[in-house]
Image 1 (tube, rainbow, N blue to C red):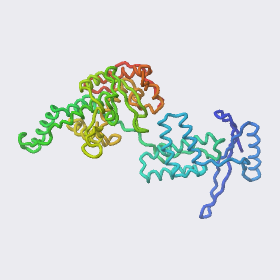
Image 2 (cartoon, rainbow, N blue to C red; image 1 turned 60 degrees about the vertical axis):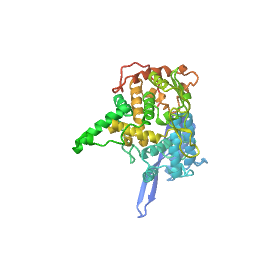
Image 3 (cartoon, helix red, strand yellow; image 1 turned 45 degrees about the vertical axis):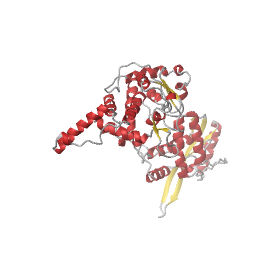
Length: 440
């Protein structure tokens, strides 16, 4: 028997019924399966007429055939429409994510493939293909296709032929979701101060003495006999200490810090401009202004007036020989690694293996973000780092008058948590106005 129901969310009527399908396997065994069918109707009268036709066809032992000449829905056409809809209703980051996920899926499934190919077997085959290709987060790719399937099913009038949505991801599915993120231990501010000290001449001298005594105890010789030549202080470490200081007060990525120029600094009004980076770069979607901590402004003022990049190196070869160029991030990572080791901070707090991009340059940034989030919430911390996903940029950029932004005073207030020289400031009783919600 067929049934009729009203789809309130779309304002249409739907006739649903089941039909028996009999198939024969290779060994001659008959397999009987009931398949669900449905037909969307513009009115209740049309739905009742279709229901009568379906039941009459079933009484005669035949299947009801839809007389409409419906266009064939293809995976490619549905993907394009889904991506367009995401661009209109979702943040820019979500739209980019879905576009990249579905581009791989279309290449595998074929853009001209009918949507009738969507089955649990189809999703499982796609998951197997991704595993064989070495994709780490298979569930994210597959679940995006499941979202696409459900979206198309809810628009059956536009995309006919879409089967009832199924899913294979999740705890009870064939494809397990990626495990919950592992909480990464972050250094305390005391650890950060030790790391900064390790990049100073006095800090280096103290490390040499400790290392000399350790080696003497292990080898049984006297401390005077331990040769520590080649482990002394290097003048270029002062430049790297300054880089770490900027990150300590701003939480910026090393790539952003190395891109800073003196023109980006407004020490008098304590403002810092972050320039637009490469297209799609994290935290660099467009130019923005963030408040500068008074301690950083005081530190920068002591460096003297300069031009060009804050941190630069002189090219020694090639067409750019003799020119001042920005430092390279890999060189900074190497020095930071040595500094963390000499500071005696547990590797779990800064180790490159456990961090995104396999770089130790995110450890101070992680401490900064945790501190700001502890007093103002992660939404505001993400806004300050340019991680709003594109939806809130215009609200806080305000290049000409940032004070007009509803978030500016909150950012300034939140920075006060960075003033303490040591200790874990992940939580605080400091009062900050309610942070904005980024909607993520």
